Image (cartoon, rainbow, N blue to C red; front, side, top):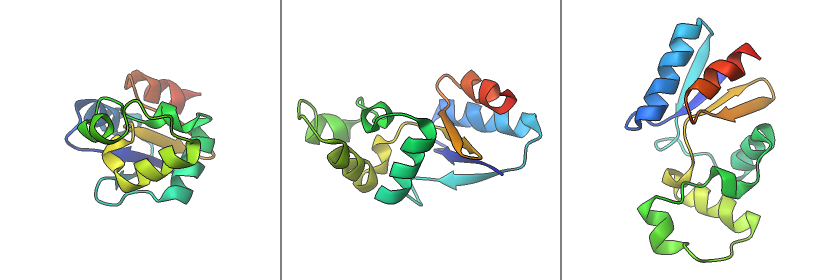
Length: 115
């Protein structure tokens, strides 16, 4: 089963959801702002993405600029920040099996589904 971590207010996330719908794949949607992933889930996502925590952080968000900009955070601190403030998590994230991709640009989702 394929899963998308989705924010309906985000244009790129909506595009990613449309790609999933058009693919014919069965999928589930996690509205991660309403049902945020905890630290353990974020660590699992990072492993599936094969990325360091900083690659998943939205540094343009006001929360980041106000609380964390310029700080030298450890990986654990970055994961804690994303768990506490899920708006900091890049989106959309699509998971299939034991792999995942950040859908930016959304075409990456199509490539991921076809790989």
